Image (cartoon, rainbow, N blue to C red; front, top):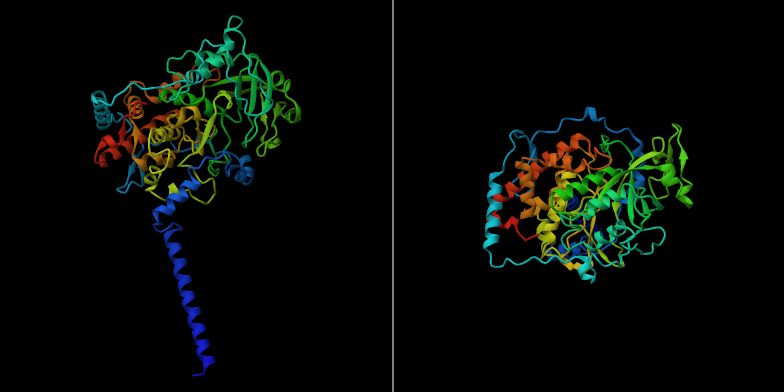
Length: 531
């Protein structure tokens, strides 16, 4: 055989082998669904640190994807009358490996008392009382750490967020009692909560907001939706989210969680739900009816003023200036010039009480096709437990609390959270930005509970409160009706959303039951950290 023929045969053989290798690689990827085949632990942990837990700004892929989906927002919503009835007593079954199972129906009446979970809670309480490690819980407030008290007239600067610079000032107490409400709220913020359960300042301040005249308005920068910063006559500030559509309008089926409109009533309901669950980490929010002509148009300036117009139905409308959803097609209109909205109390200015932004470890991908790591890895929680700040202290249990709150209201838009820097890693996370909650009354998004069913972990006080609402005599929906009835724009929620609260609470308890059942020691599932 000649040398030239040998070379040709060798080249052809090499090409055949290369083709076989490539074909096998493609088949392997297709079979695995694009999922990595047990990569080295060190490399995964490094990637996790880089992509999931580093401190970031509040920016995300949301703005990029919103533009592509904005054309869908003008479509007709699902008719609530055609929606399927809420499944009675739906519970989640976890399979043996801890993965997600299918919903199954259980009798809705009488409600399951979950006596097995009640026994675990009672045992944890008993051991906590006998423990020698029990100590007085230290829960300092901002006022204590700043060397101020509630009798001090020096104010904390309000956090305007955007717009004109706001100078801190206060009115002497003898001139106006209302002037000190903002400072009392700010100075009373503690490491564990934004306000105490018996603090009279919050209800007084919310009532104050519903009648105090506006002196200045400006548009909040950032985000995809219109928000206004309202300055009141006494110098206080609130974030105004206007009403866009009726209570009964749900998220359209083809909309992603990151393209949905924000709901002003969801913000109000989230505040009440957070308080009833015993967290008190959500900013106090109240509803108010606003006269667009006298209270907004009369104070608007610059680019915001130019966006006001009269609609063909003779209603006064405006849309503001922002990157997305600020155009005539997405305008906010009064009836004819009356408009309701939510008013969220501003937190202290970041100069006086700086905050740290954390990327949520169970953050979604904010991509139409790509999934986050936790969605394809059932052992994801073990990785989280090895990384600061979730490897010690309270933070991992705080994430479980946040999952409970988000699941009950159907909020999938939890990408970041904040803590106060001066409290260190023992600071409770703030529960902020719930405008995309309460969008689907007949659908329970089980993946919101991924932190709980992947970690099988819950704080003792949280589970105790959930059992209290499950057993009664007052169920969660009843407590929410009572709590929200005092709001000026009540009713806050569409009735199917109220029924969904009780249904979803039952799902959470079923997951905890299965976690306790498969645990070697139930006391490693239900933790009492005295918070």
